[in-house]
Image (cartoon, rainbow, N blue to C red; front, top):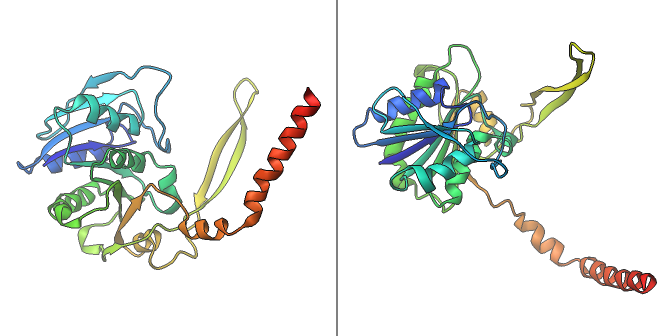
Length: 273
């Protein structure tokens, strides 16, 4: 299997290196790595449009076929890898292992999930994998789980242009309670900006806060990971509220808004002339 690995923590992050080394042990895998040259966390699906992207070959542990770092974002890395750097399209794209979870609303901000979503845009099966917080970072546990999970990927029959968002508790295998297929939770943040002063007396602001994990459904990814279970959440990028389509289509006021806008526009043009 030809596998492309990317991330948002950067090419030197322990998560991506652990994953690449573990997956490259399987001689059936052909591993390529393309990742940002520095941390690009919380960049969402940002693309670089106003400056050139630079690429540098890198040495990674294990039997990695080839690796590059880029000056771009996670989404840039995947797009560039598939269109230019790899000799052929990958069979699978994996983003991670992220140093910290990507649960609930975090998937909208996450560069890790964005890299996997970029692959989904391109019609490629993809996985985003993240490790929950805790001491003694167990990237090896997450990497081993992904290595074993790959054997089931062909049987998953994933929906076109979708991805799997996987979050792993930071625990040894014997303490992990199981695996749950989940829905995305809420996990909003209690955010605030701290106002500070630099040495020259000028004010600046630093975003801080913490995740709110209360009142999560027991079917959610947040609930699963907090209860020591690996969560696997199927994600699609089409965020259309299909229930609202029927409800809004029945409102005559929506069509009336256009008619009144036309009338106002005509009146304005007549006054201007």
